[in-house]
Length: 232
Image (cartoon, rainbow, N blue to C red; front, side, top):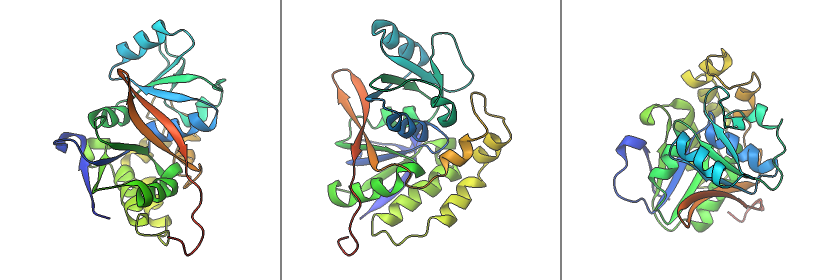
């Protein structure tokens, strides 16, 4: 299947199929949130919008990058997320790169948000559901973040079949600048376990689809069954 890779500044027009990649950490956090029972994730364009959405709907929770801040319930850390009771909740997420990339392509007919933890299901979903060329949006470092590019290339390879070795791609991600910063504790609002949690391949059996729902862009999990050997 035809595919290519772009950074957020390089986006032009409306891609037919968009896969938005943020490994460290927006769409790893989103996947963990769904595994902990979150019903849906609303993507906010600004922190002010995230707080306004939460204020208008008191049962919702809000999450942001960086250190804890007044009005926000959680930070962008997969390890720290497990401290919260998330079952059945709606989470509003605002991050520096991942949510920006998803909102930039929100009008595309098919938008998936992905990281290593949902890489395999994302590739399988694209093999069966994508109806056109796939645009991978590499959100970090204006399209140059090696952890995001490695994940995008891994998913792109797996779209043709499951016989792709993950280790070289995970190694690239583990040795990226973002990984070094995360491991060194240079990213506020993080936990020492975050790096390993971001690099677990195929941890969860779902994809994350982003769609317009009224005036909001909403991320939801969609289960993707394993593909039996020999069936593609």
